[in-house]
Structure formats: C-alpha cells, structure tokens
Length: 114
Length: 112
Image (cartoon, rainbow over all chains, first blue to last red; front, side, top):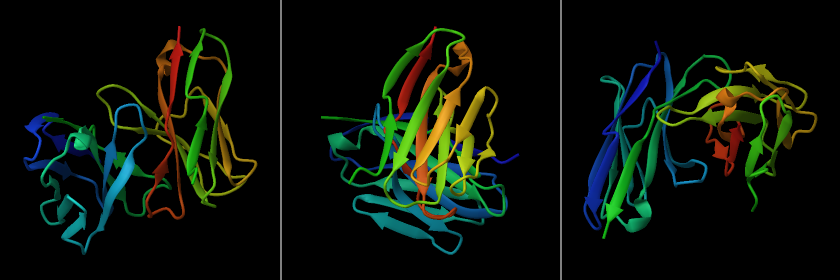
C-alpha cells in the first residue's frame, strides 16, 4: 500500500535553532517528492519538489534531502524564525499512477517559540 | 497575482442542503483538483480535472460532483450534505501532472 509517514507529529523549538523533519514513504513506482508548508487556516505552499535523481534541494533556509534507495526524505530548517511555525507536509507522487495521484503525509506541526 | 481563489471561505449547512464551492485559477493551468482535509489525516483527493470539460474521481468521491465548463473554473457540488462532509476543502491547480500544485486558501464547511 502506498503510504507516506512523517515524524515527529509535532515539534517545539526555540527561535534561532535548527530542526529536521522526517518523511518515509512506501510509494512505488516513485515520481517525485514534495514538501509543503501550511500555515494555520491557509492552503499548503510548495517549498521543494525533488525527483529521483536529486539528493538535495534548497529554498532559502529550507533544505530538503532525498534518499531514493531507503525511501526517506528530510526537511532541515536553519535558524528558525517565528514565521516558520506551521505544518510541514511531505507529498509523494506515484509515477504512472492515475492522474492526480499524490499521496499526502499527515504533516509535522512545528511551533517556534521566542 | 490572485493564483487560486476559493469561494466561499466559510459555510454552515444543514443536513440535506446543497451547495456549490467555486474554485478559480488565473494561471492557465490544465490540471485542477479538489481535496478535503480532516484532523489527523492527510489531504485526500475528491475529484480532479485534466482539462476543460473533463473530470475524474479521486480517492473519496462519494457524495460530491464536479464540473469544469471553463478552463479557469472548477466547481465542487454537494447535492445532499451530510455531517461526515464537515471538513476543510482545498482546491489546487497545476500546469502539468508532475509540476508544482498551487493551493487555494480553503473553504471551511460545517454540516449540522
């Protein structure tokens, strides 16, 4: 069964600290992996999209890594800011699957405290 | 830049009532999607469209209908609302199947 598991479910860190969020998936065959940021009460916003051949991708203070062999991805946030408080969702697309076949994780809720 | 706009943002329905959620995108995207987001669950696909005049079922289509008469608009209809349809609904669009999806702000629907 195609699944995307994220850990931890929630995380509290102090402003200025770094953190890493994890995503494990069993989706096969794999097309791409996406990380989204979802602020409370708003729609998800794309941070990165990574294909099979990409190991690392950065977007400002956000760096995503992908290990297609172990089917794991991580999102590293550097020098966290209060505005980073949000849910971070890992999404994997199933190659060759039905149109619109994105498998969503349940998200990690990050709280950044002053 | 408007991007993806959903109307309305909030709605309360009584069981058995009907309503239509409107999604409009101004990016000339071919692909449009409707998702629902429930507490403790990932987003789940209700219906999607790969172009004007086309629609297809997603993971949880029961109780919903959709139409895409114009490329920029994707409508989600509830014919007879049920409490189980209480959720936050998100519309999204993308240029191609594999490219980034842009989401609307969401519609919070409560069925009492």
